[in-house]
Amino acid sequence: MHILPLSKDPQPDEAEFNAFFPSKFSLSQFTSPKSNLADADYPQPYRGTRRILVICTDERYLKMENGTLFSTGNHPVETLVPMFHLHRAGFEFDIATVSGNPVKFEFWAMPNEDEAITGLHKAYLEQFQKPRRLSDVVADLGPNSDYVAIFIPGGHGPLAGLPFSDDVAAVLRWAFAADRHIISICHGPAAFLACAKEGDGRDFPFAGYAIAAFPDATDRETPEIGYMPGQLTWHFGDKLKALGVTIINTEPNDATHKDRKIITGASPFAANALGKLAAETLLEEVEKG
Image (cartoon, rainbow, N blue to C red):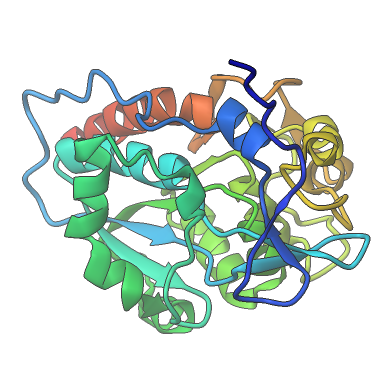
């Protein structure tokens, strides 16, 4: 029996004109019915009231250089696997988007046979559908705020709005001023550029830091297999490097990195290791008082 090869053509998203999901071939290469979740055991979880603020994207469509739209959002593995580790370590979450509109997910990447991950999604579904408006979070921030960390998940959706948000910048600058951890993965660090929007970059708080992030070079290659329907209009890695950030990885691999209080991962393959690193780091932090 002859089996036809999977198509590399992006799949139309019938909910929007000229919008596309990844091709069947690219999904076969980069998604799985189960995540890489493992070793999420924390014998002495946190029992206090400090929380983690998760800044998600409320953007579904990202415009490509050729005018097509990529149907995107937050990558579920990059969001939920780190959250699972942090949840098992005893931390609870506040979910926020810039507008207060629902979180957008790349559901084509959901590991639907992974009950731990789909279960966590269901547990926080109300918050994902009714997140806090980020400006309201900013209004409540102060030196004694309960947030022990900020988590910005990946997926291509964060490219559409987070790097241009004054409220994202305010939260990140608060984290530096209040000595809190910032956790991010894959394309999530594009949000760091919100802090450069305010000036000429000379006071960019991430300058001099090293991070793991999704490589621009790989983004330039993905249209060849139909993962995106065209080339991006800009590349966040180039902009971060120009502002003094070092990106440690050149492949979309399982690399993670901790530089002072910035904890980052390179891709979905790093989601489990990032979650473990973040959970262990934050447990150490709260033990200090």
